Length: 197
Image 1: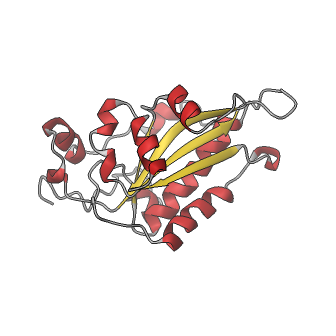
Image 2: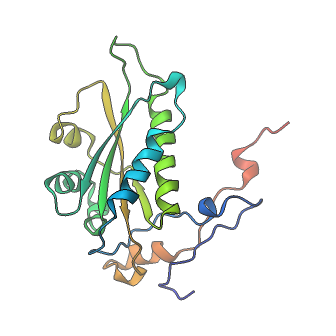
């Protein structure tokens, strides 16, 4: 693999895991003309819909913006600057929203956890179908709330970029290009599972 070829970045795992998980990674370089097939996008959203959910409350919503639409532009405008540098080339931007308070005003303690599971399902399905996904926490929460009239029961948590992988050298910024091709790293399993009796 060349310094700018990011087509194969399989994780070096301590035990065998599913290929779709080992091969999943989060690029910033997307093909600016690629259009995602609606069936593939629907499959990713359907995978999110069928995620595990505490008491089957399904405390999540998604706002989907396709490149070239006002929704996409509003989402992109509410990303923090370092994300705005590359995100316009993504085919789709999705705002991931958790229900943090139920209709009776009680805190929905697991809302963000369940949303995370739903987004993970979406990510794995999209990767399985040939797309790449990048999750962004660098968002303007209040800007998104205002732009899409999201009431206080719901919290914009992250934005997901979906698209078709482009070479790393398509990124204009040298620092971002370097991050794109840097070795993939994770904490050792023993550090994230300190008790395993």
